[in-house]
Length: 407
Image (cartoon, helix red, strand yellow):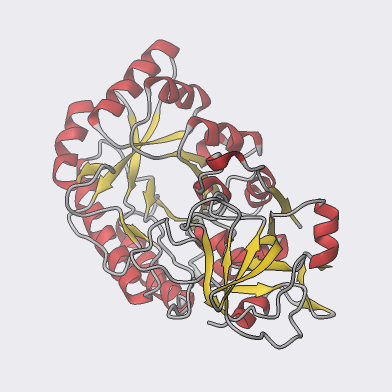
């Protein structure tokens, strides 16, 4: 994909990228400093609306808050989705602050402490237990507080999902309870906790609709066997997510309509017949917000070293670990970039975009068509609505934190 393709959803104003209806240079003046992250709420709404159109009406949409925990983003999405998934007590508090009902907040992730689980029981959120130890802590907290505890078991499936950027199921995993151990675990805890159902998340960042559909079918088959060991009806069925977005030229967008068609077969078939009371959940983070945000950084120097031109910007990998290639990339590939205030000019020769950090790892764009950029121009990195600021080493070398705006 060319940078121009990533500009299209945002639009332009007199040759500048438009964000929230505002020209980039004006938005930069409003923010007051660079670098900054900007998230477009209209594009977030479009993504939610798309999913509502193609997914079965019975499917609940959950926002995986770890993708982008900016309070304004979470508050906005809380009005558009059915649930919020959190991965820490801090995220749980943010989710509850939005007004989302506690029973619509799920708490996942390995290594939950006794203190965190006590908070979760007190709040009344759904705890997605990842181990026997966690279940024991939940029981102890419920007894201490004199409260019920709503639980779903996170299951490590006996299959892996091909095509995922990160595999989170199949084989040995720190995530969840191995599928073959689940019947014994359910028998062990009996009525000590109220088990609503199961959560299976087998992999993330998948761009192949058929592979996602296969994983969903196998997940439902697995849970159909595990549900026989519940003491009550299956009420909660988190099928995970893993919907990917394109980051590099070789990537092609996920055919979400094909994913929706596969889910219709599952929901209208097996689930309708066997589990009419179960709430199927699709949990998405990156797919909801990833393409709706950008990172904006200013060119502070343009220099030539032995025939190679470098654009030095005031941002860097301390805000952009993923775009620098140091967050999950085996082979570094450029994220889409553009000179956001010169979109109507010829791109010029190839240059490399480097950050302000004192390390050669601080590379944001290698051999990219941004040769027309000059000092004080605004370089934009796209696909930055997810796993940007909070997934980066912001304390490295003591540079200021960037601003974040929802426009």
